[in-house]
Length: 165
Image 1 (cartoon, rainbow, N blue to C red):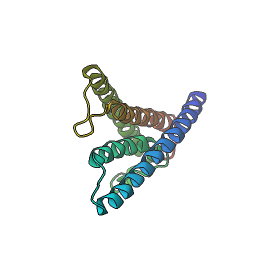
Image 2 (tube, one colour; image 1 turned 135 degrees about the vertical axis):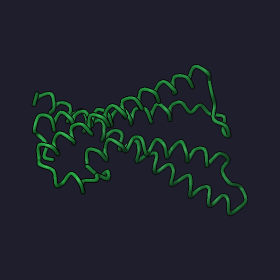
Image 3 (cartoon, helix red, strand yellow; image 1 turned 180 degrees about the vertical axis):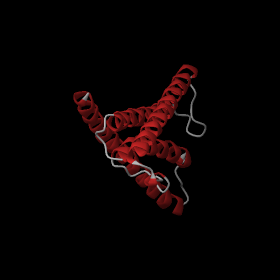
């Protein structure tokens, strides 16, 4: 079991590193787009569809950052009540919460992936720029699925007694 968890940890780290770099590139794109739009707006020629692109890029940045945030434990965790519980109860609750969250993100990733497939089938285009936007939806699905994998790995660590609660 330890070997499986170690392999999952390595996979999670690699995936999160790649997603983090991709999210950073999209964030840089957002900043450049916003600055360019502000400069061009000052001369009366704003970029058409900037609001639409910022929405797509923002969704990608958020979704691709989920797993990295989970690995670094930078999400908000409310432990005011559970801190007073015995360690065995905290371990059980953490395992259940991680498993439930894993199920949620797995379902969210699968359904988002289905939606992206539907967008491909129908050939739907964005409203303002008339561009295909299913790649952004696929990216959001990938972020959710990686998050589910990390939460499942965390569940295995907690259930196996390898992670402190």
